[in-house]
Image 1 (cartoon, helix red, strand yellow):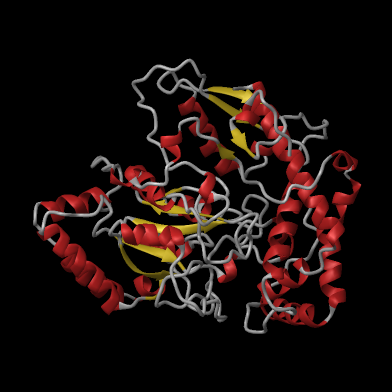
Image 2 (cartoon, helix red, strand yellow; image 1 turned 45 degrees about the vertical axis):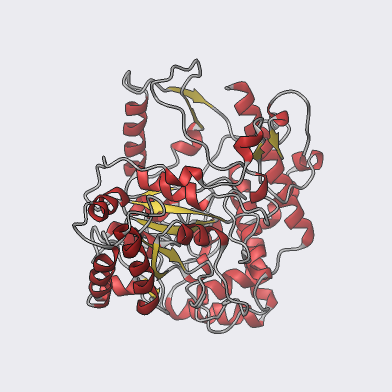
Amino acid sequence: MSFSNKGPQSQFYGYPQPCKAPETSPYTEPPANNPIVRGLPLAFIGFLSTKLNLISSFLWTNTGFGTLRQIRDLDSYEPRYDPTVIKLSKNTAESQHNESTASQSPSLSSSNHHHSSATYITLYTSHRTTPTKVIEGLLSRISSSKSHSTAFLQILPEKVLAVAEASTARYAAGKPLSPLDGVPVAIKDELDLDGYERSLGSPLDFTRKEGGTSWCIRKWEEAGAIIVGKLNMHELGLGTSKPLIYFYLQRVYNSTDYQPKDTTNNNPHHGTPLNPHNAPLYYTGGSSGGSAYAVASGLIPIAHGADGGGSIRIPASYCGLYGLKPTHGRISISPTLSLASSNGVHGPIASNMQDLELAYRVLATPDPENPSSALFAAPSSPPSPSIPTNRKNLLGICKPWFESASPSVLSACEAALAHYTSPACGYEIIPISLPHLHAGQLAHAMTILSEISGGLPSPPPSALTPSNKLLLSVGARTPARDFLLAQKLRNLLMQHLAHLFQQHP
């Protein structure tokens, strides 16, 4: 990466050198080279892939991973392993590691019919109910419903009630800790929570022997939030929109109009939470499906999620919620180890924008012991909408990519663009070009599968689902040369995006 005393590089750590990438052919939907397999054939191939390298090597090649070798543009780029970009603060006080932003109260206004954090705070401060009563009712509601209980992998009622009673005592004394005090939340089973097991939605045990709680979740606890339990997820977080899955795993619909790419959160080990808006027919999306279910069903207003390829954004979209994929490295999960460290991030899912912001502000408290998180300033207050600015509101649209969506999705997106470009919003659409889009999908899939397979035993454990045994076996076949090419492409794309931001400030 390059730095300079001028331009955005002087304002950021890790900012890529703005550089327009060489022109490439317009994006076209790639062919599905690998066969679609399901049922017993999938189980059989998944088993064989852990025993015979020939099968996983064939699928690796047939997927097109090796085609990155044909991109001569990559010869001019260095590999970039870490995509973290950090804004440097000019004000020392602004960079102090404090949680003052966590004390800002969210607005009571919300278009969602579910209770918000502000609703709970109002009820508590007016003494119309208490955190203890809320949690007692919530635990009863979850345990008495099969669909609700499926969304949770583990709940420790005595521990949860003890936290609620402490919050109740604080409200009785008129000393709540923050706008999150007494608010029920829950976390995806991808992080550590002291006293709980960690399985990543699988039959495997990833619990830290030393115990402890991930940094960002500790911040929620210190703000007084009541963590109800650990939430269901797609096994290992695999099974979202990774391009590799599109090529040779199950499709929900056998039609070119529908390409869900296995975004189900289907979990044969722990059960599958279904979409609360239409449970018999629709999935929540994955891999943070338990998080989306718990919020969309009205059980809690806020949940933790994790995203390495859509795992916050997809279930939030499927369930009509708000999800935030933060800047890479922004939110610390120390001492928890990430299985996909250069791809994965952690963030909130909420029923309204105010709660999304509140949850994020606390999660993003800088961790002085984490090399990336420690460099970030505490989240700052957004500028007031009433403050005039000369900056244009721009929307960059890569038309060939945009128009590759299915007709119903494209229609919804065009309606959204019409709203944003209306006089009420005042956005302007800027046509942009993005090079090597399909190759970028392959580079992402290759990288994340390599990282996850590198964090698990080889061959993949037999207890995993056939699809993930197959995915991990394929990921493990990635040669170092091709992994480096994927990181070169990451650098090319980041530099091109920096060029676009420079061209359209």
